[in-house]
Length: 386
Image (cartoon, rainbow, N blue to C red):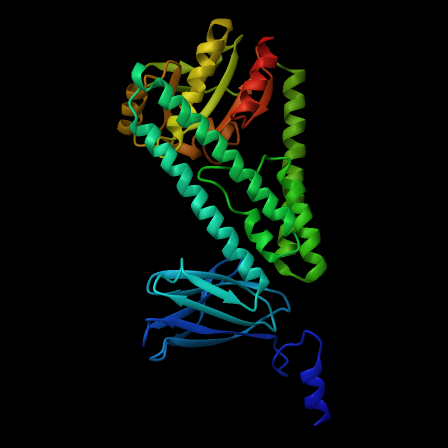
């Protein structure tokens, strides 16, 4: 009797006296009677099915979860092609109810982390849809004198929305740094974005989350993995800095690229030496390429007379689609195609892992910027010419 009482009174205790930490997930999916419900765990290595059940006539279901460590884990509840993401910690009793559309119309109680995850996903899904909508309208609006003002307005709206999303994204992480939901948010990216903010500043947010979550879950394996990633990224940045310093000391050369343009003519990057060169990597598969190319057109019109060149490399595209896009958009700079995509020498020579990406090369051949977009690119070009 005393032993049983002690088990019940453990602070923040697990609801079972078993040696294995556990949690309970249950709820009602109204309108889903006799349907299969799957509980899936998402580890750092894989997705794996944990359990299955069938809803009752009223739509009720229940899962009991065992943990291998006394730390939270990520789960999905799957039913009828819909997915409800959860962050489940040992000892929690979580209730997830839904009506009709499971992934969009659900409530979660008993897990603050899961509630924050729902809040973040709602914001991010809506934000991405807004960007896609602006980009689609822009691409579908033909270039003409009559549409000039509209296309400029759409570009401005896109940029404003993009940076608003970035600010809210980072604000969420900072505001909820001790939540496992912030750990999830660290790895979410807008379409074709490589970084949360930028290559260097991302490490600051990674470190904040690592320290804050570790204060709640000292032995959390995902935090150990995050700290390892932080260390590896710092080493990569230090190597990149050393290479850039070496390039500054020997500014007579940069890695050569020699590829054919859309007319079949061989174009060498080195032929642009002596100019300020924007080496841009892109893909027509990127839904935002129309707006990005339009921004570069404005910069090219302004600075080309002063010695500005753009050497644009298409990666991962169907050649015919790339040629059609270059002709349709009437891109005035050098545009080449690498059939090997990210596995080609062009991408490998400049450590390009995803698009869009760019390298800014000064007149003396030194690399003075990487992954500069929007105002950051404008400001850097101003430095080069004034």
